[in-house]
Each structure stands twice: as C-alpha cells, then as structure tokens.
Image (cartoon, rainbow, N blue to C red):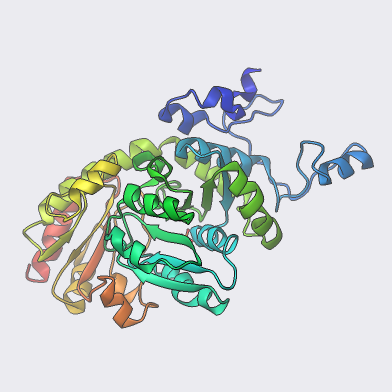
Length: 401
Ligand SMILES: *Cc1c(COP(=O)(O)O)cnc(C)c1O
C-alpha cells in the first residue's frame, strides 16, 4: 500500500509542509519508480465498452481524455492542494489561464466584480477590458484599504479579485480584513498568490475562498515552463471551475506538470534563500535610490502587515530612480543581472514595468497604480547576494547614483 500514500489525504494531511512538497500527490505505477512518471498520452483505453460508458457516467473511477484528466497533471494538482491546505486544485496551462478560468467560471452578465488596482498587466486587462465586454461590471480599488472594498460593493457584487503582494508595486492587502468583508456579504474572494506561493502565505487560512497561481514563477522556479493552478473547496472545483475548464480546455501539458512537480520539491528552500538575499540587496539599495518598495524592509508602510501574514517577504521587490532614461540606463549597465520581465527564476532578473509588463495599461491607470516611469522591478535569484550587490553598485554608479 505504501506506493499509494501520496494520494491518500487521510495520510498526507498529517504530513508537515516539507514532506508534502516532496511526496504529496505521488502515485507510483507498477514499476515502482521513485520520481513521478511522465504520462505523455492524450487518451485512455478501456477493457470493455461498458467500462467506457461507466467512466463517462462517472460511475467508474478512471481517466477518459487528457483535457479532463492526466495522471502526471493530477499528481501536481494534489501536491499544490496539499501545500495550499485546499480541498482541491485544478492545474492550467498558464497563470493567465488560471485567472481567466477562476473568474469566468463564476461570473455572468449582470454581475459585478471589485478588483485590486495594483495588478499584473494581464490581470488588469481582464478586469478593465474582458469582463466588461461580457456585461460583467468591474470597479478597481486601492486594495491596501479594506474600506475601499466596502465602498465599492453593490447588491450584485459576486467576486473580489486581488494580488498580495501585488505586481509590481508590492502593495500588500490585509487578507483577514478583506476576506472578512467578502464573507459577511456572500462574496467570493479570488486571491492571486503568485508572488508569495503557499511556502510563504496561505490565503485560505485568512478566509479566502479561491487561490490562483502562475506556477510559471516560484513554483517552477527555474524559468522553464508556463503553468497555472486554481485552488478551492471540492465543491467549487468540481461544480463551478471544472464545467468551465473541461469544456474550454486551458489544460496543462503533462510535461509541464512534471517540471513543476520537480520545482515544488525545492520551493521552500529556494524561496527562503531568495527572500533572505532580496533583503540583503534591498538593504544595500535603501538610501542609494530615491524610493524603495520592499515589504520586508521597515520603511515599507505595510511592513507589519506583510510580516503578519507572510513567513518572509519573498524574492521580488521594486525601487524607483528618476525617470525612464535613468531606469533604462541602469538596466543597460548591468553585467550579471539579466534584463528580463520574468520573475520567480533562480536567476536575478530586472525589468522596467512601464515599458514592458505594464506597457499595455493606459498611462493614467499605470500612474494611478504606482507604475511610474522610474520604477524598476527586481527578482532576486539564487546567486551570491554579494555578487548582485557588486553588479548593482557599478550600474548605479554608471548612471550617477
Ligand atoms: C506572471 C503573473 C501572472 C500570469 O502568469 P503566466 O503564467 O505568465 O500566465 C499572473 N499574476 C501574477 C501576479 C503574475 O506575476
């Protein structure tokens, strides 16, 4: 029986997080492989026609088609659910597939959603452009202020959607307060937890209903594949999310699922080391640049809140220089840190959001959410932080800072 323990919640729920990350969800085949098997198959066969009929009727356990189920993808879903402390999880092809599915599966024309102002560019596009096109009204609020959610509520408000910490300004949302406001009104909270991951922050413990991920970021952690995930109650996943994803097909490939399974085994180690390095780099930059946006530093206005709901501040932070010219000049002077708009990688990466990740957001909205022309976002990787500090030091000097 030992080979099935990774999928038995009666056993796995008793495991501590590090054990869950390595063994959660593992289902061994008859070969007894130690590493998870990669099932590259689109279909499944049945011994008898009656078995096929029984599986389609939901009367027999088993897989029917890889848009709906795949053994490797299922191992990942169970592992993420365990790490999150969620009843169930559904993996998707990318983080944006997860966000889109988590919202469209439950919203209909006539409904209203309140969204956080500081958000990943494509998440803002969902809120500002896609949902309204289908008759779903949206209001964007400064999510740092719980009262803003109260003030934006209407009788038809169905969902609150926000990130914390938010991309790229590192706004922190008070999870207990905002989720409490939603609970009192029967509103569903959808939290984009890509920056923190379940290793640092578990929104369900603060009262969130649905947690959605770009697993492309810290979960893969080595810049290899795109992936996403949606976590929630079994009822939400089975009866609200699955009818949407099964029929629209934002399915994760088994290969990508396998890569993320391997990534999760080291998530805790990586994110804690990268968080420590990000603090060291942040302390170096503080005082050297005009403005720091790092929730792990006491200078961040929401530092206390961030430390209350997160185990560490994470590997990503932002800072401001004078303008676009100085920001681009600093990027061009880097010799070690790459110019890249990705985050969550084991390599240190830096980008200028206003001209890349947030260039699709209208300028007035960009400034309103704090994405100024001088803003730079840094993902601190697994390199020695002293080498990163040396690189930043020479690049800052090159632009006169
Ligand atoms: C990257 C990111 C996404 C989108 O994820 P993809 O995997 O790139 O589709 C969504 N939200 C946040 C906060 C992100 O950082």
